[in-house]
Length: 618
Image (cartoon, rainbow, N blue to C red; front, side):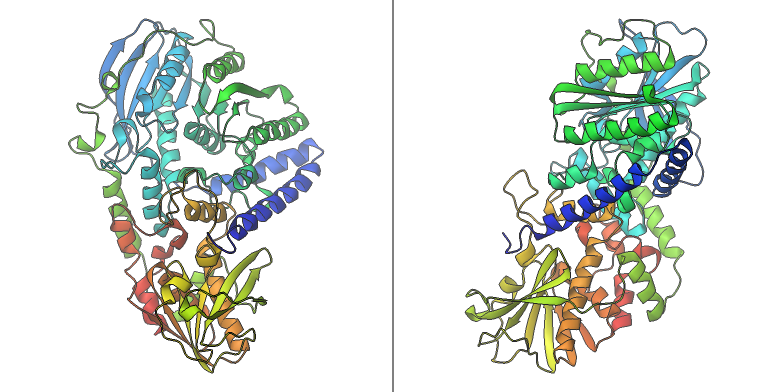
C-alpha cells in the first residue's frame, strides 16, 4: 500500500467530476431545437472520429453450415468473413413463416464464454424470431467458436485486453475490431431479400450493451437500439473504481464534457430503450441520470416518447425483465409483432448443437486467418510505411503521442524522512506535478536532510515499481548524489484500491494499473505521458537547485518513461538504462504482449521504435 495510495484515484475522480460539471453547464445551455441538433451533430462527429475501420468491405462469403427446426423458429448456423478469410460464427433466427420483408435485429452477447450459445442470448434470439423478426447473434472474437487463444489462463475478457495491448502501439484498438464485426453482421442482414432494411434494430447486454451503444452511434442504417446493463455515467465508473473491458474505453470520448450518454445522443432522435438492474455494478444512479438527460434532449427535438427506461429488480444480466422490455420496445417501434412479446420456455440447445464449425473452433478452418495473422500483417505494413526521423521530429511526435508540453518546474512538499530502506536514511520530497497528484522524489545519503541541495553531478533513478526497495542495497555517501523518483502509480503512490480481490499484481489484467491507464485514455490523455511529466518535473527541480549533470538510470518498465524524459528534456541528461529496451514491435509480435497498457505509447510504431529513440538520446 502506498503512502499516497489514494492519490491516483482521487486525481481521476476530480478530473471526471470537473468534466461532468463542464457537461452540465453545456447541456443546460441547450434550449432550442437548433441548438440540440447542433450538439447532436458535434458529438456524432466526435464519436465517429474515435473509430477507424478497414477502407473497404470484403465479400461476406456467407456459408450456411447447419439448419435446425425448433418448436418456435428455425435457425441457420452460418459463417461470414468480416475481413478477408477472417470468419465470424453466428446463428440466424428465422420465423417459421416469412411473408414479404420483416424487421431484423442484431443481438450482441455479453462476455459469456460460450458466446452465442449462452442460453440468455438463445432465448432472446428465438423469442424475437417467434414474434416475426429475423435475428442474428454473432460470436465476438475471444468467445464461443472464435477464441484466438486456447490456454487455461486466458479467458474471453482477458483475450480482448491482450489483443488491445498489441494493437495500441500501432494506433489501433479492440473497439475498432469488435465494432467492425457487428457492422458486418448488419451487412449480412441487409443482404437478405426478406429483411426490411427500414426496420433494423440492435440489442445487447453487458459487453453486448456496450457494443450496442457504440454501433448505434456509428451506424446510419439502424432504426432502433436497446442497450442493457451498460449505460451509466463514466464518472460513476471512476468513482466506483470499476475497471472495464478494453473495447469499452473510447479514446477521448470523456474529454471536454463527454459522457456515455453521448453514445445515445449521437443519433438522436433514433428510438432508444435503456435497460439496467437495481443491483448492477454499472451504477443504476448513472443509468437513471442518462435516461433523464437523453429524454431532455429528445424532448427539445420533439420526440420524448422515443426514449425508454426499464430497471430490473435483480443483479447484472439480461434477465427476463429486460428481455421482455426489449421485445415490447421493438414491437412498438417497428409496429410489428406476430405473437405476445414474451420469452419462450423451450429447452435451449447445447454448445455443440450451436457449432457453426466441425469442432467449435474457427481458427482450425482450412484457408482462414486468425487475429494473430492479421496483427502481423498490420505490423509489417505499419513498419514499412515509416520514414527516418530526426531528433527534433521525434520530440514533436512524442509530445503529441504523450499529450504533454514543455517541462515545468513543480512545487514540492518537504516531507518527513522515513527510517526504512536505503541504509535506513533518506529524504523525501512530494512533487506536485498536478495539483491533485503527489509523487515522491527521494534523496539517499548517510545524513537526513530537509534541505534540497543536490550536487552538481547527480544520479536520478527511475524504478521498475518501487524506488526504495530497488535501491535498498546501494551504497550511499553523505552528499546528495543519488535520487530516485516514484512516478505516479508506483512506489509510494501505488493505488490502494480498485480491485475486487487481494491480489495486488501490477501487471495483471483488470487491476489498478490497467484501470487508471484506461481512465486516462478515456479522457483523451496519456497515463504514460503523465509519468514522463513526473520525471521531467524531478529533472527540472534538481536542475533548479544546483544539479548541472544528471545521470538518468532506470530498470524494468521504468526504462520507458525514462527514455521519453531523456528525449524531451533540454537539460544535460545522460540516459543510462541497465539494459536497452526491447523494441516495441516485439510487444506486437508477442502473442501475449507482456508490457502493461500504462506503458504503451499509442501509435508510436507509425513513427519510430524504442531502439531508434535510444540512439537519438545517446
